[in-house]
Image 1 (cartoon, rainbow, N blue to C red):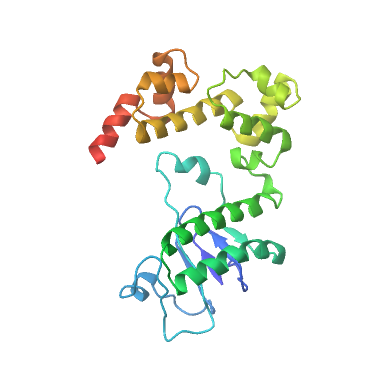
Image 2: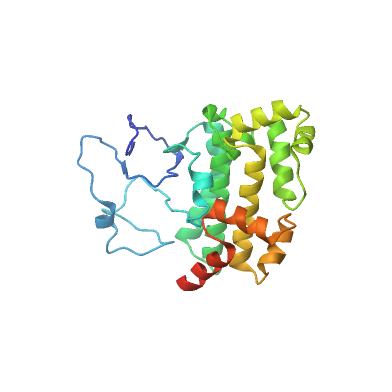
Length: 259
């Protein structure tokens, strides 16, 4: 059984089931819900660290693979805020999709070879993407956000185009034409699916990319502004501060202070 804080009902888990906890809420795994749970930190206190296979109480019939993903704190909310408290992959067809990655991960963990850490890291990323794909493929439960909008063929065309060419001088009319809709219908449907207007989404995406460039490149603010489709560094800086909470130069100073 899986019990997640804030979720009213426990979830029954079967062999090869997979679950994600996007918000990192406390949870309990139990074969008997009447038994008082033991803090996992106590169980693993004297065990090996990340990437290790640990045996508890002499072993048994359960083998579980667990891990966590770390996101840039400034950007994590864009993905995580639109996901539910937990994602449960339980259909046999869906589990078969993930089984290859899980089985290969277990093999690498049980019998480490040169490069195993890198292999496990990439397999974990594959599992995350597969789980999100399967979740979105279930009808999306009326969710709102860019990730959910990708399951809509017409919205997906526009979002993908923005992602592939953020520096393009996008207009609402051009986006609507890609979606084969009138401007008013497109703007309304986009906001219903994504939760914000098309132009606001474009700005947010550009600023995320700009923040990444400031972090991982030596490009000047003016160069980044131009790469993000801005003719004016001033207009770019204003948009950057509105989305990420500080000016580009202050953003860089904050990064330097953390090193």
